[in-house]
Image (cartoon, rainbow, N blue to C red):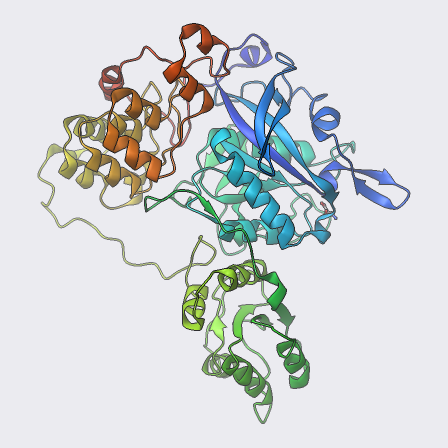
Amino acid sequence: MGGVTFMERENPESRYPESRVLIIMTGGTICMQPSADGLVPMTGFLENAMAPRPSFNDSSTPTVKIHAYKNGTKTSLDSLRTPPSAYSRHIRYGILEFQPLLDSSSISSIGWTEIALTIKENYHLFDGFVVLHGTDSLAYTASALSFMMSDLGKPVILTGSQASIFALQSDAVDNLLGSLIIAGTFVIPEVCLFFHHTLFRGNRTTKVSASSFEAFDSPNSDPLAKVTSLGVDVNWSLVRRPTRIAEFQVTKYLDTAHVACLRIFPGIKPEMVDSVLRVPNLRGLILETFGMGNAPGGVDGSLTKVIRLAVERGIVIVNVSQCTNGFVSPLYAPGTALGRAGVVFGHDLTTEAALTKLSYLLALPNMTYPQITTQMSHSLRGEMTEMTLPSFSHPAGSIDSAVARLTSAESAFTALGYSIRNGDVRTVREILEGDEVNYQLLKRADYAGNTAVHLAAVGPEPEILRVLLTRGASVHPRNRANNTPLYLAEKMGNDECVKLLREAGAHLWEAESSAKTSDAGDLASNSFVEVDREAEPADLVSSVADVELDEGVKVEV
Ligand code: ASN
């Protein structure tokens, strides 16, 4: 993989392509400064905290304005860009600040709705989103957003810091820079939390330290990526991928008002639990139990009885463990008794994920009690570990083409490219059948930055595009000319592919829309300096034979 050299990074005339990232600032220590009342969040983060730092501002284009939507109104934002990263891209970003900025201990579902809607209305304008947020409730917000967003196709990365960016010794710069680079470089279509060089799935996280820079962990799930001195090491086999053709949607509301959380302790009285379960209009309770899901039964089973009666009144009770690591299961008699009383086993859900997931399900219209309990014990967004099914392998001899003998990823990608060009749906299916290695193919690109989806968008067989999109391929990567598959399909007049791509959430970028209608002079005035309007789709297809690029990276040199 080629990367930019130190000299190139220092060069303000660099013409590397830009990714766009929207930063949504909600508050937190990262933007705080001392006041008479203690640390308080301060506005003006772009000018005061980012502009003066060379790693956030290459100073080459100080006054570029970019568009973003705020509460339905199109606004113009000041933007800055980073120097080119090791992935040969600048990250151009602007910031939308919450009013007022919050200490995250005060966030509620209103704030979650505001973040989700801001991402929704700006979805088509940015490659990724970074949400700056206090650490205290960060894991709750990450979990909530993961459920509120369905069929997400772009990265949403939450971060913050343990010390203010204005402090001499702080984790703020590393956390923010890492988030920006990942959000602008990799199509990781998940709500993530980035902290201390580590990218986690947001709904698996929990805050484990009040003061250490290593403040978060995802005890039951490996990190999605790690930042090292060599770059970003993404664990692609863990990254969730689309498996249906659907556009990005946001659920606007979580029902946090009727859900409670209660930690069991030795000696807890059944009437204490009962009084929580009798809070007017309560619809759900997260019960934090001991170990693998046990609660004191009592000689007469009175706690279990209180719980059973609540379940009969229609309250959804979910069992999660007080232990940070491990899962609940009806192994011991007390856990079995809870299960018999109608408690749902939350397996290895964190409390944060259990609470926000239940609030999400309770807010969905027309959900029955059994539907909610069933969904609580299945993974919706990778928030819990599900039993893994034995992996499917091809019966020997079922693939009769030469493809079966291709072992290296390069050869397989080449074969995939040719099959796409020839409209050979069967071979494409065969190449993509089976294990993780084949998923890697969907994130590969040829030397012109074209992924399999780019190739299928200009190919003769729309069914191939459907096959790719239902096996985890993203519609969003842009090739080296900064063009999306949708742009190429439209240019080619492939109407069926255009329709399919749009149904899967694809959209044209501003510059692509104007490139369709304007002349070359207009093109120079937009930000996509490398939009290649002259490249013929046929050229794209002929580039397939040479492949050696990193998975998931939008652009390579
Ligand atoms: N109290 C702060 C907050 O959550 C803590 C932090 O951000 N480190 O807003």
